[in-house]
Image (cartoon, rainbow, N blue to C red):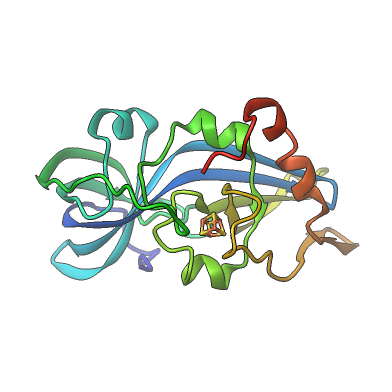
Length: 221
Ligand code: SF4
């Protein structure tokens, strides 16, 4: 969903069915040797109606809200939310969700993945697992509904002297390292002012998931 930048963000009403629940995360990039992930909440993907428009849309919610309602895939919910302020910085369409009602509750999925569609774990679990780059094509197709899939809000430190930054969205996977659906996708270019762009070829993935052997004896599915 694209918001008209010339119109002030509006508070909307929504109703829809949850199709996916992913961690909401930010990633900070600086040239080729810094990629810092931070998990800050959850993104609920819905199919339904907002502001009388039928569509797919994404709600950014807090960890406290997910802990309170324990949202599940196929739950039907309604509420209010605000349109996002920054189109290029926030993947979710709406945030500041309030007045939540669960209109129809579904059984928790117990099917073993992939994709893993059971309950999304606490943010601490995501943080301890770490994430690998995930092909955006996979994120859109085979990984849909997987609790380990993620589309991060990425900030690139473009010029430290002026504070200039660039923004984009990137897909990642927090899932088992042997998942048969996994594909890294192409290397990711990281630009910097007046320098040749660096390329994240995936070598940082090993560092990002290296703490799993400490936190998890086996790769937790
Ligand atoms: S590759 Fe990752 S996100 Fe996709 S199904 Fe496997 S564990 Fe889930």
